[in-house]
Length: 371
Image 1 (spheres, helix red, strand yellow):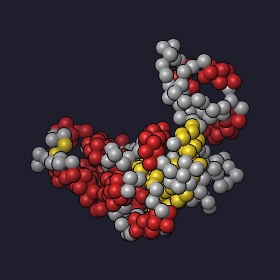
Image 2 (cartoon, one colour):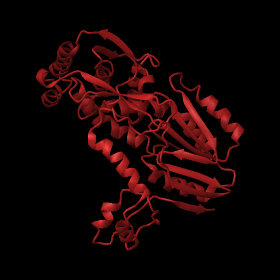
Image 3 (cartoon, rainbow, N blue to C red):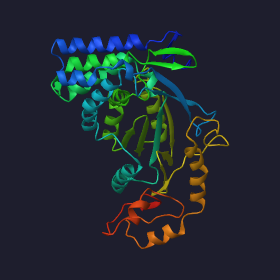
């Protein structure tokens, strides 16, 4: 919390009642002035007895040195949660359409794009660049996030959505961003920088903000016939540009926005999402990637996670070491687009066991492509 300076200590005074009244007054004013409909007002207004202040908890990043923590704000009953969900439903489709060519959704999709690009451009010296954004949700300035939403709507040539004008949508988004409160260890806090990780709208605002920051990177990729994709705060590039030039470019990209800090890795091997990809002398080798733990545990047993989650960790680890031989036998008799690998589950087991139609099921596991 001290690192990002994103939170203001409010002491022991509970802001819930004030926030409920403030939210309802704001919504009532919009309805009275006919900026939102009666139906929208009824959907978004707050019932005091059904609300509570958000709570903050932390998830350990066991795959990183010194186990840093990720703050998660649990605000399922927060007074602004209904507005956040509604705005996210309006705005996320705009981002998805606008950023379709530079956004990746999962490792399976990335494999397909890498395969298509490699068929034309792969050489023995092709490099991977993976970049990680530090503290994306808390480092985005709140007003900067609202400006990104404005640019998102203007770029999409949208003046209103669901009958609500652009300026009203921006006012609602600003209200959500600037009214994140939570409770932790007897004290109440207000988030004064970034958005709450756990609020639906935060992801869309962060994605929109990054979309406009990354424009120089994606345009460079097009000019140099490089491959570029982003998954939230993880960036992926394949390029034939000289490594020394790439290092200089990373330094330049780190100066695009004072709020964005990129940690980069450049080489012939990349670990990205659930994939490990290697350029082995002009041949691409891909494997399922499991993040290693820097601690002697995946989850401290003293954690507040449910007991079944704690039990499932060693159970899943044992399954990987000793796979279900009945399942493997069934797999051999089922058509798949890619050979499966012993000990690696790709989430398709239930589809295979319940697949009387003989549907061909894609499996993303160990593959090799040769130029």
